[in-house]
Structure formats: C-alpha cells, structure tokens
Length: 259
Ligand code: NAD
Image 1 (tube, helix red, strand yellow):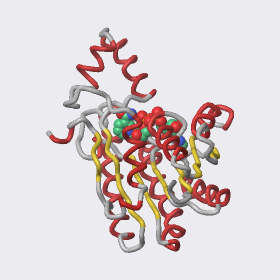
Image 2 (cartoon, helix red, strand yellow):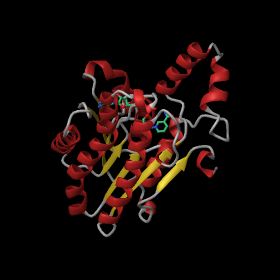
Image 3 (cartoon, protein in one colour):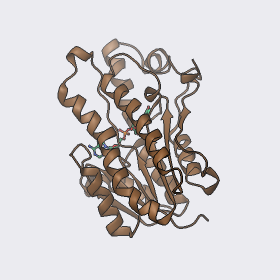
C-alpha cells in the first residue's frame, strides 16, 4: 500500500475524472471529488468512488467562477489537513466557427480549464513544497498538441494548459513536486457518447458511422481510449518511481499525434 495521500480531482463526477478518483481511492488515498452540482445530484459518483472503502468527500464548486479553484483547494485542505495530489480535470467543449463563437462560451472554456488550474495550483503548491512532495496532473488533450477546426477555445486552452504545466514544472523541479499533462485522444465518456448521438441525428448517419468516420478519423487505432487508461497513467505518475517525470505532455491518443 502506498503512503497515505490526499488527492483532489476536479470535475470528477463523470468520465475521466470519476475514473481517476476511483483509481486513487483503490490505491488507498483520501479523495476529494468535485463538480458544480449540488451533492444530491452526484451521490452515485460519491458511492462509486467510495466503494473501495477509502475516505471520499464531495466539494461543490463551480470552477467557471473567478477564483473558485483557489477556494476549492482551501476547503479540501481544511477538511483533510493537507493536499498532496492535484488533478486538474474539469473541462467543457463548444464547437463553432470562430466568427460565430459565442464570447460567453470562449470565456467559460478558458475559465474552467485554464484559469481554474492556475488558481488550484497556486493554492496547492505552498503545502506541497513545504512537505517536499507533491504531484500535479493537468488533463489536457491531443488538442493541447494539435488543432482541429471549429474548436478554437478548446484548442487554445489546452495548448495553454500544456504551457502552464511546463512552466510550473520548472519552478518546482527542486522541490519534490512533479507537474505533468496527460493528453488523451478521444476517450469514451458520457460527454463523447452524447456527441456521437447528436452528430448521428444531424448527419443522418448511424452511430457506428459517426464514430468511425468523424470521431475516430484522426485516431489511427480507430478505437476510443477508455477512461481507465488515463486513470492508470495518473496513478503511475503519483508513485515515487515517477519522480523524474516532470514537465511532460504524455499522449494517450491511439497514435493521433504521431502524424
Ligand atoms: P465529462 O463531461 O464526462 O466530465 C467533466 C466533469 O467536469 C464533470 O464531472 C462535470 O461535472 C465537471 N465540470 C464541468 N463544468 C464544471 C464547472 N464549471 N465546475 C466544476 N466542474 C465542472 O468529460 P470528460 O470527457 O471526462 O473530460 C474530462 C477532461 O478530459 C476534460 O478536461 C476534457 O477536456 C479532457 N479530455 C476529454 C477527452 C474525451 O474524448 N472525452 C479527450 C481529451 C481530453
């Protein structure tokens, strides 16, 4: 069993975040999960993460709000006494040509994925550096390394998250803290499943056609990544043998960025 650690995973009531939180709980970490919803709405996620018997608590915080991430980390530290592992996972998507891109959605995407990571990191680092151990994992995307049309806010934000990752890694390199980005290709989550169904309706195609011809077109394996694959990498990065992995953008994308 690993040393007892306290982990916060933002946006962890569905999809990738839920999978990471569950993997951490299975490792015996104390886990803080989060979303913007009231606790009654996320009881299924809370039970799923707590199934292994770990201590799990839910923290409602809307990361679209300025400084929300800073207060969230403060609340987690107040509840658990410290924070050792921070995973910035919360993220949202909007697809539109740039001249039609609603400014409100631009700001929301930047706030939830990039601004919140800045605020959670600046709140979490002092404790980590004082104790000489910490892990920060930012869930970026293949879109942190490559562009696609009609996703200007998402692609710009995820590229910025990779830049933030590298910068903080350099600032903390001698302090026992590692900072890495994981860059998934398309991962099979409820978010993606809903998009597949939408596109099938819009294009009058079968869901299988939409998956293969639209979603999996840039992913050479022609298979969705599973959330558990991301969770396993996050768990590995938290181990002591991953102490020299810092400042990287780790692709789990079925070969997308090899092209
Ligand atoms: P998801 O929609 O299943 O989960 C997103 C989580 O973020 C949910 O728990 C939701 O409640 C939370 N969230 C949304 N808005 C929030 C807010 N304002 N404040 C707090 N929490 C909020 O999405 P997912 O597919 O699991 O994606 C998770 C992360 O992985 C995102 O950063 C996404 O960009 C990234 N990613 C996903 C894919 C993919 O194909 N699914 C690929 C690459 C990267």
